[in-house]
Length: 270
Image (cartoon, rainbow, N blue to C red; front, side, top):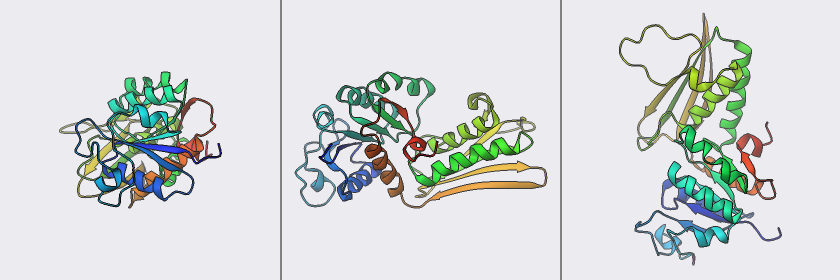
């Protein structure tokens, strides 16, 4: 492909959507060809640049993804699980790389992405940053090395507006810890404690979710043993790291075979 890949951003009016738009605009390797919002949004039919409070871009905001998807080589999607499933089906039809940063998927919803991945590249991850994906690898290795005598707790904090808990990143880290231990996360996870809970279950992988202020994202993986603790931590201070990672995934996906991938694949760390 000699022309720069065309990128569509869904959920264009949101904080992450606007960050993705700016990241694509600033990139020398991609071009913005579409911006999609939900039906009835007040941006609908407006010029994207003016809607964002800037200069005219000559790109009209739409709630119908069909035309922009057909003109695109990749879709950047940080919306909702239900919307992402709809977009996955359409991206598969148009053979566009679908980069999904949406969190809060149920297991059946994740499984429902499989048919689309037979026809197009899907890069789906709970977190698109380089640092978090390195942390995921470290978590798996440490969990394997330390063994079950160390208790694992995952603590995350995000801004007050986040709607899902635990975060997608926390669940990624939990999956990595479970893989290191050779267990299934669904069986080992302890996602809530309240009241008289009794002693901690042996082998549990605990989660705690904190919400407040404008925190972009903080994640700690705690390995607590007798007489010592090991804490692996990642702190995000700018959500631009997620947008840069998503764009990197979109560019990486050009020319890849259809299938399900994650950021570990994109970064060549698997």
